[in-house]
Image (cartoon, rainbow, N blue to C red):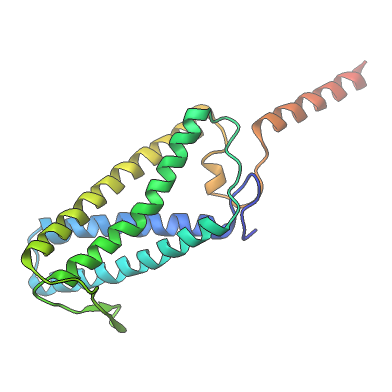
Amino acid sequence: MLRNSDNGFGTVTIALHWTIAVLILGLILAGFVMRRIEIDPGLQFSLYQWHKSFGFTALGLAAFRMLWWLVETSPAASPTLGPMEHMAARATHLSLIALALLVPLSGWAVVSVSTLAIPSFYFNLIIIPHLPLPKSGTSEAFWALAHAMLAYVTLGLVAIHAAAAFYHHLVRRDLVLIRMLRSGSMPRTGSTANTSGKDDTVVERKRT
């Protein structure tokens, strides 16, 4: 099932979710390596170019994810979530969608305002033009700090998001995590319990 249903996510949403998550986490790790570890300058230049290429890919997918979220049906919240949990989950989800756009956009701004004016080669296929921003060392420092801070905020929210998903899967034993792993309509917990109760009643009647 490609599209979302009333109580389950479709293949497109799930694929975008996990692809963007892997890209963002990989880019944060690569950014840490590029700036914190002494490496060969040639290798560092290559890493920066790969970092930018995957960053532009993440930006494109995040933009598509935002459009998909705006036009696609949103599944109903899991019945095991309370009102406050539902609000927190929605706020975290929307924040992650916004950050998936803001992190690569701020990175694009860094290379655009840099006085070095190094081109951005997208997988050595095309050159991505710089944003129309004034170049200066001050602007580069500002956007570099913004890029780093936004990445760290994203990492923190991802950790909270993942911890909540595992809590629901391992402790609450509901379908919150399963819905983002398997496309299609998920049975509601209450409905499942009611169906099970009806089956038990039928079996009991047959025995008597």
